[in-house]
Amino acid sequence: MLDLNQIWFILLIVLLTGYAILDGFDLGVGIIYPLIGDDIHKRILLNSIGPVWDGNEVWLVTLGGALFAAFPHVYATALSGLYTPFMLLLMALILRATSIEFRSKQKHVIWRNFWDMAFFLGSSLASFLFGVCIGNLLEGMPIHSDMELRISFLALLKPYPIMCGLFTLSACAMHGTIYLLFKTKDKLKKQIDRFTWHTFGLFLCFYLMVTIFTLINIPTAIINLKVMPIAWVVIFINIIALVNIPRSLFLKNYLESFLSSSLTFMALAALFGLAMYPNLITSSIDPAYNLTIYNCASSAKTLNIMLIIAIVGMPCVLAYTTIIYYVFRGKVELDSTSY
View 1 (cartoon, one colour):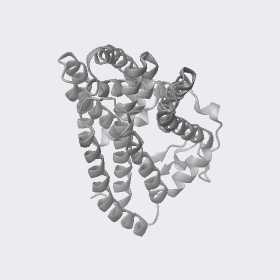
View 2: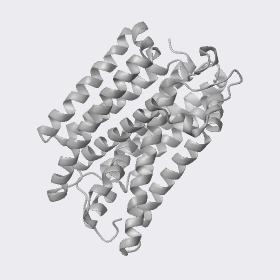
View 3: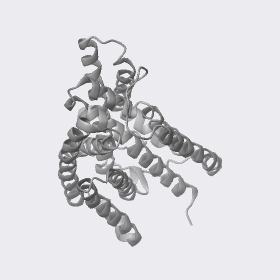
View 4: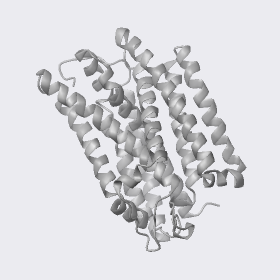
């Protein structure tokens, strides 16, 4: 039987998965955006995510709110100790949002080039910082006995977190190009198809590098796989989904490619959860100082009330997301109201 703390840990991973899949592809669109030279084609890329990008970020807001309410000590430690990277992340997301809205307000070349660069930088920086954060969580950070995190921003940029940042960057780029394959057509679609193979190649390289480094240097990451053999199903799903991406791309089955890419993100998020459990932040000073789902949780009454709210609210979020994607399905067409 799962207790409330375990249930909320699983719900956090579910919210992280939803955000990674949904916002991952529109971050990816921003990453490959400078490779598109034609102004009309750039507008098509913006319109492919225009109706959905803000809804996708609801998952991130919900994740932050759930972390604050369920595990307040982790929320306080992370946001106070990692203030600079979180502010950079917030600035990147704001820059990205404003660039989408402002880019086509003027036809001047300098104006559009400025916002084009802002869109690219905001998307790339956000993706990279998410990966750096995951890398530091896996590797451990200097948490002291008082649950305080004292670390400089530059100290976060160690080789492994940087590698994880580049891995996340490549994963989002791949996910974004695959998404664009069934939102574009004609000449642009052929161009995107070429980019997809390049981004998949980069993703595969960083995937292997991060996997090998993790297995060698972070042995605690596979402890739960040893004590929970059923968790190996996640690895099997990850491999099958990963192998099916190039297969479905070769067969021009782009919807299957996107579903396989999404399943890969889902499996990676599950593996991250398995690597961390029962910790939320690992201490590099002493394992006794780890912030876990038990020593940082709210009261049982709070977790129970929140669970009731989640049971009511999550179907609403899923229904809203489904309706939006259904309404804006199909190829992108430009009109007078387009971005």
